[in-house]
Every structure is written in C-alpha cells, then in structure tokens.
Length: 329
Image (tube, rainbow, N blue to C red):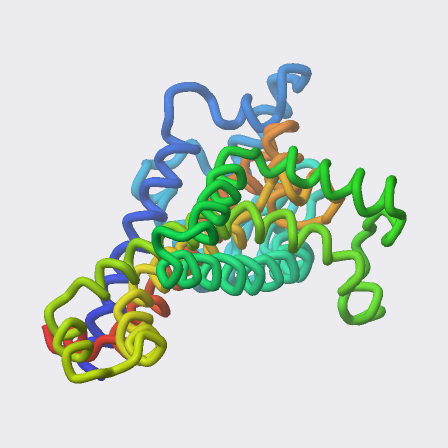
C-alpha cells in the first residue's frame, strides 16, 4: 500500500508540474500582449510598460516561468518601478484591481465554496447512491420506472432552473425559508446551515442524477457476475448480496466520479454561487474574467486544477481500500 501511495503522489506531482506549465503558457505566452490585456485599452503606454515590468515579460520565457514557479514555493518580489513589492509564498501574484495577494483572495473565498461543496456532496451521495441502489433492487418494477423518469428529468434540467424553481417554491410560494443570504459558519452555525440549505439541494439534486445511473448500472453489472450467482445458489438472500458484495463492487466508480466532482465544485460552482449570491471562488473567477484580472484568473485555474488532482489521489487511495487488487497491480 505504501508503494502504491508513493507512486500515486509521484504521478500527482508530475501532473501538477505539467499543469503549471500549461496554465502559464496559456495565459502569458499566448499571442497578444498580456500587459495590455491586463491593463486595459484605456491604459497609457507608460502604464502598460509598468505592468510589463511588474510581470517580468521582458525576460526570457524560461526565466519568466522560473520566477512564477519560485513564487509559489518561496515567494517573490515584484517591481513597481519605484519600489519592490514582496509577495509571500505561495505567491500567485497580485490582483490588478484590488492590489490584494491572489492567494489571500482565494483563501478568503474558499470557506464559502467549501461550505457549498461539502453539503452538496452529502446530498448527491445520499440521494444518488440511494436512488441507484433502489432502482437496481426494484429492477423492472414501477419503482424503477418512476425513479428513472425522475433521474432523466434531473439530468435534463439546468442547475439554474432547478435553483430558481426551489427559490420560487420554498421562499416565495410556501415561505418556509427566507431568500438565502450567505452567513459564515464561524459567525452563526445555525443561520449558515439554513441559508446554505437551498444551494446544497440545488447542486446536490442536479449532480445526484448521474450517481443514480452509475450506481444502478454498476450494481446490476456486479449482480450478474459468476460469484454472485454462486452465492445465490447457496441461498444467500438478495439484501445480503447487495449489502456485502454488489455495493462493494459498485463503489469504486462512484468514488472516482465523486473525487472529480468535488474538485470541480471546489474550483467554483459558478452558476450556483451566482444564483444564491455566495461569495465563493467561482464568483471570484467570473468577476476576474469580466475585468481581465489576469493574475486572479491564473491563480483560480491553478488552484482548481490542484484540488482536482489531489481529490483524485484521495479517490485512488479509497479505491485501493475498497478493492485491494488495485494496490497490488
């Protein structure tokens, strides 16, 4: 298991290195002038030159990337023309619009996005896996048909439509809840939970449809294997077969999908955060793209990619724990 862990960590580090090269090349080495793009059309030639100096765009490409990489691990100094501005590690640069460190900007927004991601993940796992198992157990019956229709409807409904429907039904028509407004967990845990309930349900219901389909197909595939037929021949009950054997066989693909989805949501569930006014990473990315705040865009994309890679490492470890044969390959 240790060897498998080291192998996966080594692979993750390599992927992160390639990812940093790709992101840097995409945003800073693409055709055009990154300094003009970041500064805007109204900037004077002198202002564009100042931005170019601050980004170090006059240096060779490898030197530029080396400064970018060194800033992440050891911090970096930026020249403002008259003085040096120090950026602590992990340094992803400074926002052009607020002059705030990008790392601090992302850390300030991360709790809101983490709140959304963890709650929504709980909803999509409970609803999605539960619905998939029930469909597999009731295969061919009215229950499976009803659940299939609901799953297809959820798959075809955009997340912002689902969110709007919940807002109109729960907040405007039934008036069970006020319109949500984000409250930090540290300020008031009860109000945090009540105000995050609709965002959790919106994103959770939207994502749960594919977990239901995946769990159903994986469970049915496992139930059709030879060793399950042998257990049936020895008189093992259907519930025991599903609980002890079929579910275990169905879990690995669910774990892999969950890791990818969790990493993606941590990178910003843009529509959900925008619809419910959650000040998370996704909303920050949208705002940065709107004003072409290049360091913030690069920082958010890099952090999102890192979270997805790390989430997949965790998924591989859980995968190996669920199926020991994976670690022995």
